[in-house]
Length: 215
Image (cartoon, rainbow, N blue to C red; front, side, top):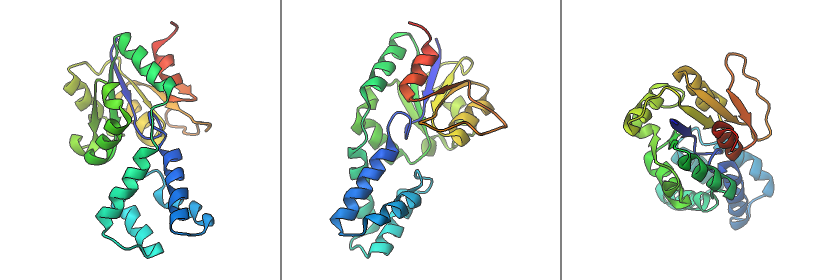
């Protein structure tokens, strides 16, 4: 057995659904048009920018009172409150560790934000560790983040797997690091021509089970 790397947002945790739920509640609380849901989701776009940048746009659009940092904290609390580890993922993570895999979360983002999600969801007790890009000093798909995660775990990178939903960071990163990968499709079709995942799975749990092989 070796290293099993997993992405966090929209892989282990369903961030997209949590953001939609938060946005719907937010629009209701400020009595804004439900039609603005699309604008909020498009502006969030899976969080490629810091949360404070998103909050600045929301604050300006709706004329919200309060400091950006306070609003961002409230948004994060609401978002994290809707992010849970589903039973299938819990069982798959447990099976991987019982089989001897070292399970490490590798996620892009800010340490404070990503560790909040990991701890609040209980993932900290389900994995062997994690590495956040801000702490690593490099972001997926840079292969150095995988090398640094392996070094921190005291395991060889050879034989590792990466499971994630993002073709441009998770699967491209695994490709550049020369390790196997499982893409969490979530109903999408693979379209990238330059590289492809080793396995395509419907969910994160399916991806873990594919790595583990037949029981």
